[in-house]
Amino acid sequence: MEELHERVSEYGGLSIKERLLIRFIKSRNQVGKNWRGVLASKDPFFNTKLGGDYLTSVAQAVSDSSRGNVDRIERVTVALEKVAGIKSFPVV
Image (cartoon, rainbow, N blue to C red; front, top):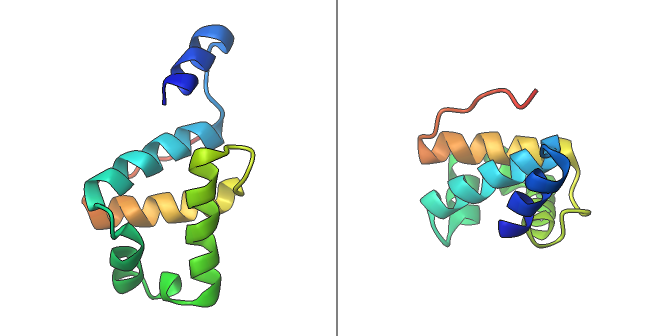
């Protein structure tokens, strides 16, 4: 997270992907350690092979932001925010 703050200072802003990852981390922390299971139980899409691939992709993008497709990150983030009771807002 600090790395992102340094980037803002240096470049003046975050990419859409970085903003989504920050939102994802906040909602994941609010839902808790079993966020994958909670999301899969609340949204049938994430209880499929493709949905599981989305979850894995986004989890990997947290540690390596070069990974993860921005559309996948958005889909997971919005769904997780809904489960966490966080009001979602448009990224762009």
